Image (cartoon, rainbow, N blue to C red; front, side):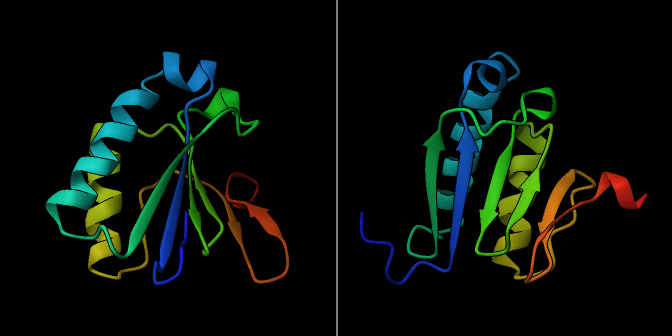
Length: 111
């Protein structure tokens, strides 16, 4: 897959635990919203296996921003894509990690 031209890449965990918690619905919703909002040339999606955050799943990782979203569901998935289309700073109250241009930080430890 050639990612040239894409501005965002969503890695959607479909490991066993995330799948039991609704990852397939999250994947389908994200892909439907990308298509509905005509973002196929801007946002690429990849189903992954385990991302190592099972207790927080389903997990969606946004690159190049480096933001990890936890406990994703249909509503949060739709909102994620809408906010990305509007090029707003995405805030779902679901952020687990973010990247500060040097390292990953845990949102939960900052609350």
